[in-house]
Every structure is written in structure tokens, then in C-alpha cells.
Image (tube, rainbow, N blue to C red):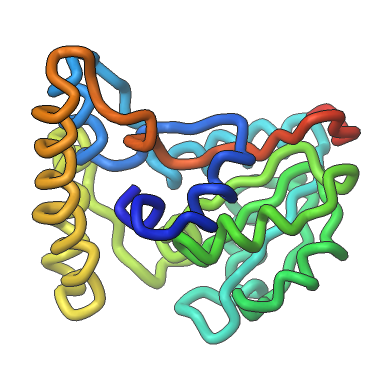
Length: 221
């Protein structure tokens, strides 16, 4: 959300996605300030459920892995095919800036781990007729490949997964920690007081889950 506030082009891309979910505890807190009780759905949890759904119904999935990242495509495929027998999977390692590569991808469900804003820009370049579901899942690939240890159930229930990840990798996470724990709450409070009891600006949105465009011919999943 902080990136979207600063980048008009990124806001435009996000507005082209049809479904959003509260992925971070900061958005949950923002909802409380607005008088709502949003439920949190992490990208990793959604990813697991989506794979289970696709494996059970013979749907094909495509993994878009960051080239040179922690998790490569071959490693991810091996792990998840063992975890979900019968899963039909393709994928590859991609340069996040090469959005022309997205035009050649075709599958029932496409998952990308670039992280914002690169994953949203990449997924927005998919051809509408080539997919039914496209999701940016951030660090989920690294969890399932075993390259990064995920917080336990206790930490997740308390909404402190962000703290666990920061403790485990402070150098990699410090910037996101700063944005999530200082910049974002400050922005939420400013909007809260500016908007009064009526709520925040519509730009205080949630994580993107599924693209949807007018007159789309996407296959049903």
C-alpha cells in the first residue's frame, strides 16, 4: 500500500485486479481503526489451498520464480509434486523486468514470487485468455522449498509472523520492517484523522489475489 500511494502507475496496475485479501497484520490493524474486523489470509496459506484444489481437479499450475532468487523452479517443482501428488505443473526462472515473457505463459493458475511491485506488473502482462487465476504469493515459494523457515502456528496466530521473519533475516527484512511498522501505521493514522469517523481513503487497500478485466475470456477454474 505504501508503494501504491507513491507510484501512480502501480496504483493503476493494482486497480486491474479483481480480488484482494488482507495479507499483513498492519492491514488488520488499519481495519480495526476503521471499525471493521478483517480476516487475515497470508499468501502462503492461500497458495497451499490453491495447490490442493488444482491437484484434486487436474488443473495445471505455472510457477514464475525469480531468476537468481532463493528458490529456483526445478527445486520448487520437486518439493511441491511430492507434497501434492498428481499436481500438473510447469514453470521457469524469469527476469522480473521481462514482462514480454508473461505473454507466453498459459495455465489454469499462475503463481509468482517476485514480491511487490514486480509481481503485480508481471502478472498484469499475462494474456487474458491464457489463465484463470494469477496470484502474487511473495515469499511462499521460499517457505515450501525449505530455503526460508516459516514462523510456527503460535507466531502466526498472534499476527507476529513479520517479527519472526525479521529476527531470522534482519538484513533482508529491515526495510520492509520500517515500512510496515513505522511508515504504514503513520499513514493510516493520518488518513484516519483526516477522514474522521467515515473511514479512510479508498487507496488503503489489501493484497491482490486475482486479476479480472472487462470482457475477459479466461477459462473457468
